[in-house]
Amino acid sequence: MYKVGFFTESGYEGKIDRNTNPNIRTDSAWVSATDATHHPLPQLLHLPDNLYDVGVMIIPKNRRDIMKHPIIENYKRVCKKVTIMQESYYNYWQDSPIDEQIWYFNFLTEMDLIFCHNHTDVKYYNGLTNVPCELMPTLMLTDNLVPRHESGNGVIIGGNWTKDYGGFDSYQVALEITDDITAITTGRMKKEEEQMLKHVPWVMWREWIDILSQYKYGVQLSTAAAGQFQLNCSYHGIPCIGYSNLNTQYTLHPLTTVDVGDIGQAKKIARWLKDESFYDDCMISTQELFEKLYTEEAFQKHWKDVMKLLGVHDGQN
Figure 1: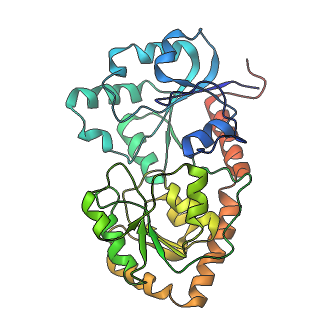
Figure 2 (figure 1 turned 45 degrees about the horizontal axis):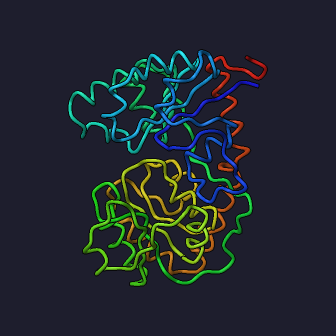
Figure 3 (figure 1 turned 45 degrees about the vertical axis):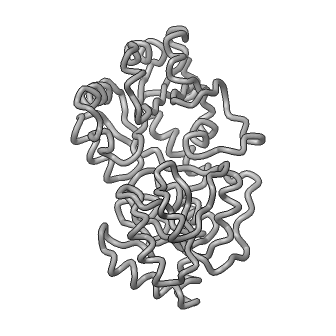
């Protein structure tokens, strides 16, 4: 079996224990589902040659420290095939100082493959770099999880009041359903938001999934990134209103997806969701699509297909 190394800013080393880890968010789910071994990025400097058949790296938003080290040279030394996973929305890195932008672009062009969140991102990165690009579908591990079987009547919005999260727009759409609105908490939450609506505190992923099950509706009108909120809603059968440039939105919630910026249509759908018949159609549809498209088995099949494209096959040492 081929060996996979995963490299991120996280501090742990080794494989994921999915039975005891309460915080298996998307990146940890990828590590587990690919049976990868994880290393903190600086550890690359100390690993032996050709340790892994393929490497997957996520460059942190704060790149200044790793730019001081010969990361690309050591990455290629340790891994026979080198890939990078898109971080955040497609062009977030262009808010960085120019030297960081150039460093990141050059890093991308050295890759054998770029993994992307969404089909729109694949087009962007391939066009920018001419490097082959493939999707890395957002993944949630459902071991020991219990899907929603009853809920309250509230709306949960998937972001705070910033441009990237689209919290203000999501709040305006949610008001078409009810004023019982709760938002998630991120590191970019503005203090004034606490006066406007309730918030779910920052919790471990496993607890978040249980908290989410208490809500009836989801809204996230944000920039397109991993789409974990839409995926988590789908698992619970919670209809989510969101934009069409996000894979987990348009594939899992086709009845509640709108074009980017179409707030008017989003408000119409919000009002339609108060009709129990339409709501039930949305709920059943998204649960069925989750089971068809976003199970761990579906992810692993896709992963194996991508490995074949890279020339990495079972049995390779």
